[in-house]
Image 1: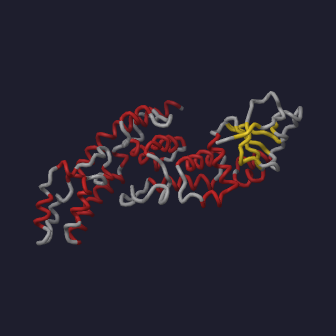
Image 2: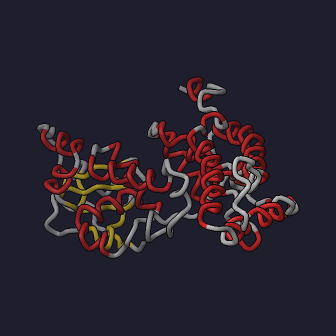
Image 3: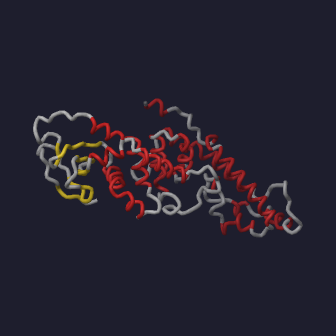
Length: 321
């Protein structure tokens, strides 16, 4: 982001720079975050945020001088928030239709700002949309999990953002998403999980939860993959019986995924998608039975993630309070 120097009324206040686009000459309040100034309109802020509405409804104390707490002739409010979050939320306020039209689905940076500032400043519609976006990447149906394209069907985010997502979920006490967000962190490599990514590290208690959960998740992955085509409840029709007999003899290495701690997507990266390709060899009824058996195992794991990731364990969250 580029910014230009702004003239300040108070020469003793810290140097701040005008934001290039979110600076309106007819604005009547200046928000300052991390040294960047946004000249905006009280009416816009009050319309969208209950906190700003209340702030502006109180009588303002009379300033001892014209330069006290002002910027470019307007009252100035210094925020403790990240500048990028403030920029995103103000951009949505002023350019909402165009803003959404440019993106089929928002990025994690945008959703992060929606959640954090939406909660802090009681911007209910943004906060609700942020929670909705998280729920779309953490569905309750295993058939939906991992399906679709990031940025088109759900918010775009990188593998490395999982720690940031988990930390925000914890900070905002979104308990129904805690286990799901930590499950994704379990898929990170050891270095990223322990040392952090993009300057963010897991809280100590959540790191311990992930490290402990990995053993159980790896064992569950093995159970799912070893169970493929092994059910004796259905030995297949006359046509499929010999095919199933052959499939049950397949070497375990071909069944096993490299996603060691990911039983929910356990056969997503098998060589030549072995499970799905093998189902294509079967008739509709036999393939349907084995797909349903596989899905039931993975759905059971998803429904019981708390059996693997014990949110109540350690209690370090409470000790820090």
